[in-house]
Amino acid sequence: MYIATSKTSYSSGAHQQHNSHPENLSKVRDLLDRIAGGWHSRAQVKQDELELRYDAECVDFRADLLPFKNHPIYLGLADETQRQILSCGWLAYNEKTVAIETSIVSPACIDILDEKIPGLKNETTKQIICETLVDEAYHILLVKNANRVTREQRGLQYVHIPTFNLVHFMEAEKAKHAEIWKRQLVQLATCVVSEIFVSDYLHLLSEDKTIQPLNRETVAAHRHDELAHSQIFKSLVKCFYGAMNKEQRSFFAKILPCPILWFADLELDVWHRMLVQLRVNGVAEMIKDCRFLNQQGLERVNFNGITALASEVGMLDDEVCRRNFIDRGLMIN
Ligand SMILES: [Fe+2]
Ligand SMILES: [Fe+2]
Image (cartoon, rainbow, N blue to C red; front, side, top):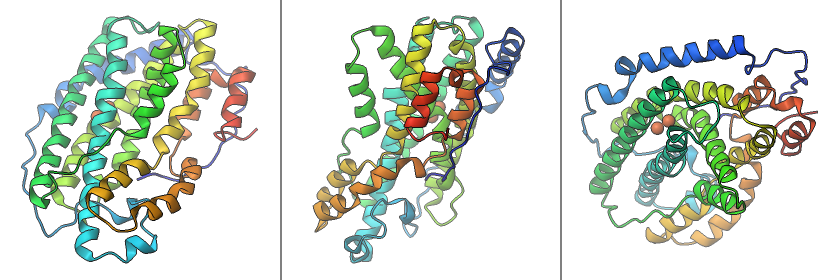
């Protein structure tokens, strides 16, 4: 699901021309113009719908994405139970996608449309955000269709999937702040990280020939849009970071590393709940044994795109921001 990464050292960019420089900003705006103009031919919502053909012989998910894949309790389960667990893995993977679209990305997009974010009040931005909202609504339809078929085919209609830690953690951070602008920037930072990470999240399954073809095609269609979204949100950061005041900039820079770790969380409570519903024996012990893996979250995500972006916009020129990235293990000194 994730690509291992290495920490990079970024020099303080006092000598660099950052993206908030007017010349660079106009290049960023040109890029956004081109991406907005290409939406009609690029967007998956404009293409033919996927055929919902299902091959019951194929597994629904990759075993190597299970956090407990090497645990003796999992390895000792009957084949049929392991296949059901893989189907639950697919259901949860899709529900996490829905949570990202509905609880993280869409509210941030609406804040942008409502002109709550400095530097993003122009018409091109509004057009691209409207297109992105249409894309995300289509992704919800794609994955909800896939989950409905999977639940019917595998008899898993009864499985309830609780709220993901990614959303819990973001909401808990927002609740710490009385100021609305701070809560909006927590939402925006989580959205930016999610939109940059989600293509990696989708990458492995989008090319996997061993899983259910419908699942692969669903993920591939979604990823096609997300590759554009990653560019869009990187460009939007370049537009708004320089337009914020000093207090907003330092708050955004302080928060930005947090969603990287939230995204890397293994969602073991969701797994616990699903496996209890499947009546798997030894669930509590297996999940408890896997908790330590959440300490190694940074090894599971490729955060180079975020640190490079932070460097490009000049975030790392500020010693406090820079120290924040180093202290969280995202950079070396
Ligand atoms: Fe999406
Ligand atoms: Fe997206």
